[in-house]
Amino acid sequence: MQESGVRSSVFSDSGSQITLRYFDKVSNPKSIHGIYPYRGKMSALDAAHVISQLPPAAILLDPFCGTGTIVYEAQAHGMKAIGVDNNPLACVIARGKTEPNEVESILDNLSSATCAAQSQDDAPRMPASPAKYFHPDTADQIMRMVQVSTNFSFYLLSALYGAICVAARACNGWLWTSTSTGRINEPLRKIDFYSTLLRKVRKHAEFLNNGPPATIHTHDTRQIHEVVEEESVDIVYSSPPYFDALDYTNYYSKIVLEILDIDRASVRKGLIQRYSTYREDMEQALSAIDRVVHDESLIIFVVGDRKVRGKLIRGSDFFTELAPWDHSRIVEREYTNTASGLWDKINRTQRKEQIVVWDLASGGRKPE
Ligand SMILES: C[S@@+](CC[C@H](N)C(=O)[O-])C[C@H]1O[C@@H](n2cnc3c(N)ncnc32)[C@H](O)[C@@H]1O
Image 1 (tube, protein in one colour):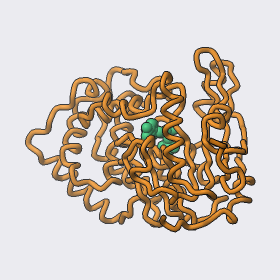
Image 2 (cartoon, rainbow, N blue to C red; image 1 turned 135 degrees about the vertical axis):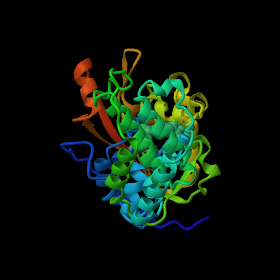
Image 3 (cartoon, protein in one colour; image 1 turned 90 degrees about the horizontal axis):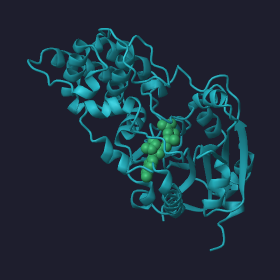
């Protein structure tokens, strides 16, 4: 068994003390996390606040890492961090935020790629489905850039995919909101994609951190023990997929996946997505996660209430019943200043989100 960084005595206290704060905003524009608008991305301010309460010597795993918000913040805190997600697009962004990089060489590579893109004789045409969102000249520039991106670093790929999303909004007059993404607003504006991409690359590059190397696996967490060593993880911290079947391949990702000619249906198939099988899928994931933690690990899940078929399900109730671990501690709060908070206002609901903490050193596992 690999010796992990810390053991129980360090967290038996921190596990029971973890606090949540209220922030005025959920996102921090001065950060790397705005590089791509991923559906379900968690608040980096929250993640950093929770992580600041954890020992930097610990090995941390996010088994549903998405675009790597938690992995990046753990790395910045000096932790050895591992992320796993079965959505290849999300994993590109997670790697882009966390792989070692030099700003100068990123800018050099972008500059040669832009020259190569501009001087191509014939670029492929953008497929019809995403092309409807872009001015034809912008679509042409995007396809030229995609064509020369085969040897891009993960950071440049992340910026390229994020810039495609920015260009889609800009071509549509910046009118897209979280509820109107994909609505076509004629006439479509012409946007210079090369400068949009350059701005994006520059904007986020200064936040690349040079923390310990992080590892990102594109893998199904229901079999996480195939890529993460058994009993090797000190802390699991994650926001698992939602149980009202949020589609992580939709929204802006649909446009990007179609441009890249990646089959959305096959990506979706590997994700915990359907409400009808959510319970058994999550049970399988939790028991696989149980194999990679040890007897003194700390497990922190950010979950939320969901209204399913008219019935409100409390996220912490669902997870504490399903998890193989005993004696959880729950910190609860209302959604504030988030898209979820807005949804509550419109639907006149008062859902809450919870942090569920299992400290295996003191709580242990449920009897078989
Ligand atoms: C709430 S999101 C996490 C978002 C992440 N915290 C971020 O800030 O980007 C849940 C993630 O679970 C992933 N997921 C769903 N089913 C999965 C599975 N079977 N294996 C691994 N990851 C999965 C989705 O792709 C999605 O990225």
